[in-house]
Length: 474
Ligand code: NAD
Image 1 (tube, rainbow, N blue to C red):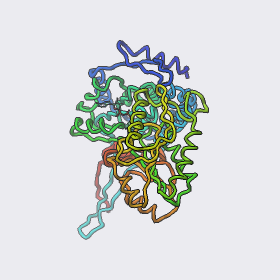
Image 2 (tube, protein in one colour):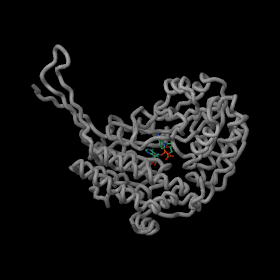
Image 3 (tube, rainbow, N blue to C red):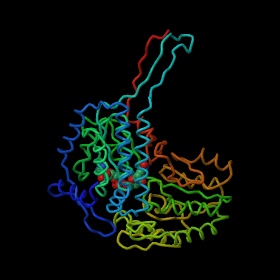
Image 4 (cartoon, rainbow, N blue to C red):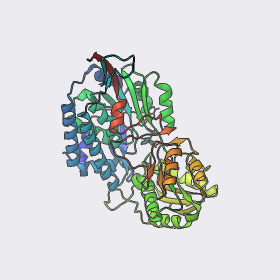
């Protein structure tokens, strides 16, 4: 593969006039540029996609995805460097992300090979018949518009693109304008692996110029969006009569009961709060701790936070790089300062230098404080205490979000109550809220999503129409 610098240069060479510049959040330097496309250019992409009728066999789709997975693994170090350069995520995080991208491709390849039909005998009741009903899943008639956020620059893109290819669909994808290079390079890898061009086109530009075209063009059958709640809801209002998959923000709790292994719980708290610079939809955003163990837990949390090395994202020993930009770091700082003004106690962190924001711990946090009532997208560990499981569940359910959750306890009676009563898409016992396989169902309810799931298998269902046919069968 050419070096990342020359790849970025090649992309910039096609960017045209008044391009969108891409900056490195750590150095502040402009590292590249991508085209600022017009609505007319996006319309062309949608129409070219619509005019193309994919005819790849299951074997061919699996082969393309497997080939792309091999390329991604082969170039892992270079691709991780690219993610780090445009997002400020540290190399540990971006290397992990590349491994996930390869998993998405591998799962897509194996799912593409599976027949997804069902068979029903029709002689099941007294008025039955000697017939059978069969189902098959067809690609959509129209095009899929996909819009992705900045926080996993390549893996969020993979989670839209791979199920689309595995189901023989056509997709036009707009990545976040903050991290478009990883998306473009991922698209190039798929085309190098043999994917026909019209099955995936990456468009870039200012959302205020091009988003409406992606949401409302008559060729679009499905909008698949991952991002914040406000934009997700505005998309729901604008997209009209078409299928929509919305994966929105989260405010996930880690709940620590009085019987929990506190060493394990505090390790989960730090990794859940600070990995990916705290910028995961499923990051730990609230830590709910039983009063009986709160002091011991918080001491461990502060010690482990102090040991979490943040700084130069390109240093392989760094545990955490920057957040996406200085504005995001300032936003975390202002939410924490506001919480302190409202009575929370700052125990660690809250220093900022440009887009670098130190991992931060507060206790004495009240669930009505904006820091925890809304999503704070950064490396912050706010500790809220409770006295009973009823109170823990009420606090956990007390926000508009419902993405994921984590619970630390050994007691089965507690676990069964959490699984039954938490208003979320996922409950992970003794794991971080973000734990998942790239294959398994994933997604939120309430303001976090409409209940449709992603994960390769569910996304493939969402990207297809079920057709039923019946035959006489004696
Ligand atoms: P964002 O909502 O600001 O942007 C997401 C995408 O929407 C970007 O591509 C952006 O260009 C585009 N966009 C901006 N304005 C638009 C408009 N008017 N119409 C259509 N599209 C528009 O989100 P972000 O800051 O990039 O990402 C962080 C958010 O994403 C957090 O809230 C996080 O929790 C959420 N997220 C959710 C999941 C999930 O699976 N539920 C996963 C990752 C991130």
